[in-house]
Length: 271
Image (spheres, rainbow, N blue to C red):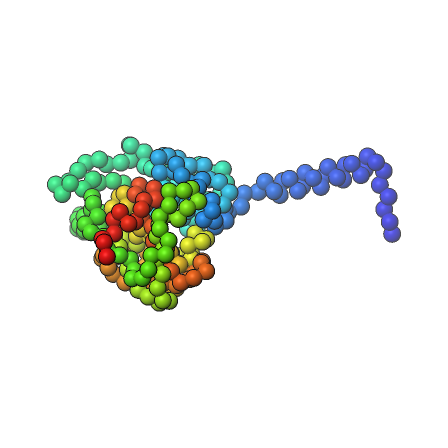
């Protein structure tokens, strides 16, 4: 059976279909994993206090390029696991002055808004008595980040096959080649703030925070040997070299200072 529609009926049906399709396309969907080629859009991110989410962003990529732990951004913006964000969403990148404690202790360390606290507070932190409060204070003091990196070490043995570039689309670290499974080591003492493969193009990635200003990244690993929130020492075995997210076996190593890429060769000791 064939249906014949008059001109007005046909126009009405087409307009209805268009409205339905437009309504569906406007539904918010989680932003996909970021491509490394999009990193240029984050060039000025470290100087910003807020950021408007673009298509292709993730909370992990925004944290990395702004020099933050993604848990800190999640806490600042009341975002809970699985940390979904949406294009057009406005995120705070820094705590407001009212919520930042600038008192300095005798050790010269600046206290901030509990940068090491997880997104969800534990029962002891929320409801503990005097003894629990003292214990929490002692743990925070022990886990405080130092003001400076005490010493740098090479993250892997092997040949440097790619060096740092200041170009927007250039290499933002160094690449070290060796055999698959070769040890990847922490370049300095710090806390593991990310492990996973959410940043496409980096493969299996480890990010370590060393001070409030310095982060290092270790990409393309075959296997990750550490967990998030774990403290590691300089030279500690943290991963095995691999080719995840790339075409050959290598370690891609980056150093970021306040979110900005810096040349790792300025920090690593001479061989």
